[in-house]
Image (cartoon, rainbow, N blue to C red):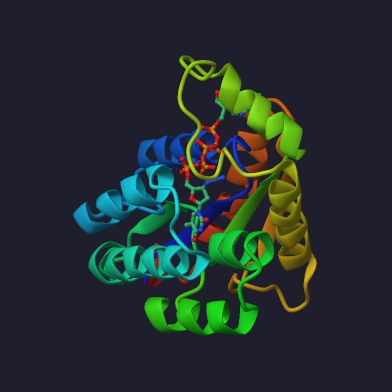
Length: 221
Ligand code: Z5A
């Protein structure tokens, strides 16, 4: 069985940057890595992603079902087979995103979300969830600062209120500090201040991931 590492955080927290950096580092060290993201990572998932980010007027429940459908397809066709063949899977967002965005952000029933999360993943939890924490305003400003960010049309989530994004952040902080850890498996959550320099963040993540990989039984390395 491989290892499953998930990156979580609000908009512009630096998840994609760090997921790519970790993937490159692991590949250089000789590990077989699958880097993927949610929503997306499969043809169905990419179609759902476009819908979710651009179509206005989806009801919160419809939104929840679409994220969930995309996840079911990703887990069954990409993530689980890769883990079974011993690869390291890095995923940019996973089940905690549904708890924080659809649960804390949209106000949908958390019990329903947890049941759907379990059903669509067949109880698969990340070995480690890295949470990059930044103030909402910082993350949103970073997205505007990206090339084309000033002129690009804001997507469904970027158009949400600051209050929405604050509830999401509070949701992450609560999940990451809960005992036993919620939405994550054996290694729980690694919380990192996302305003630190990129290299410092990458080193902290690497230190933790290397320790997890070193602790794996010899036949899993
Ligand atoms: N969503 C949901 O509601 N429910 C679910 O179940 C799931 C998702 C799975 C996906 O959009 C949306 O779906 C997401 C939640 C929702 N919307 N929101 N919010 P997405 O994939 O397009 O958006 P995202 O996941 O939020 O990613 P992002 O906005 O692109 O941000 P990021 O990946 O965290 O950040 P980044 O691209 O790596 O970096 C952003 C910028 O900051 C970039 O210019 C970097 O160069 C810069 N950066 C990165 N690190 C640093 C540091 N350390 N210092 C300074 N600047 C930095």
